[in-house]
Image 1 (cartoon, one colour):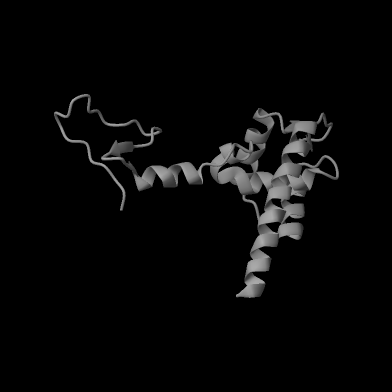
Image 2 (tube, helix red, strand yellow):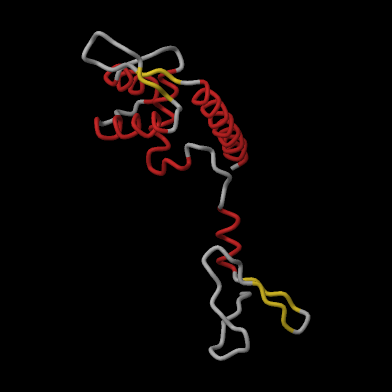
Length: 149
């Protein structure tokens, strides 16, 4: 295992910050902290939805539901349930709608009814298209690998 521990009192020694890799050149041999490599490898560029944390999957489902046209909360829940077999609870639904709206991915539509319909914005369409393309590529690779197993 390649790693370097820092000795107290070493000239110029200090602990690295969380985002800083630990790389040490000693006796013409380069060593790198393996945990730093893992952290760097697992970092993916922000997709916009990744910033939503646990709301990323519901966000994809909601955006997909809004592609054909505006829908209110209950209509989104029913559509998602029909398409994906997932039932979004009211807390998840409305928290995700608020996050999507705050990011400009959806917008509320004026309504005479007490229900508030939402529609997907151009930014939401673009983001959803990119996310679905990545998901499709992952699914293709997974299926190809499973066929060989």
